[in-house]
Length: 112
Image (cartoon, rainbow, N blue to C red; front, side, top):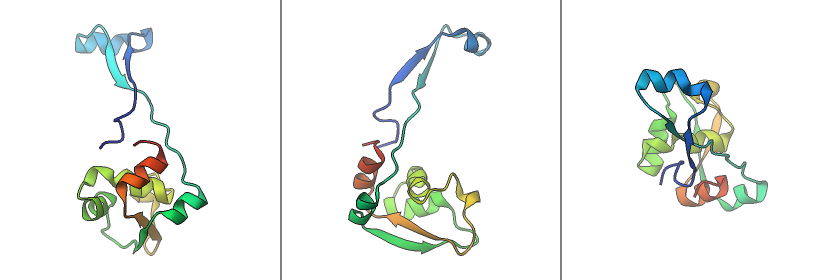
């Protein structure tokens, strides 16, 4: 259940990518469309069961995702839910919320 499951796969033969295609010996490039994630509403956040985590030195989003979802690839769910672009934006002592039901969270974010 990755974040690209429902995204379109685009075939790109535009002039913009001509040098890249030539470098790789390709006639066209297949790429994913940009996913558009939704921000959870207040009501949606209320319905999701979460746990609190206080960010400390050495924490990593992928480790938290592995701990709570058994899959480190879902680090971005925790980041997105808390409004962070990456873990460099999270300061020590910050309280982050980790949604416990990954399936429900993915539905709310619009990717499941």
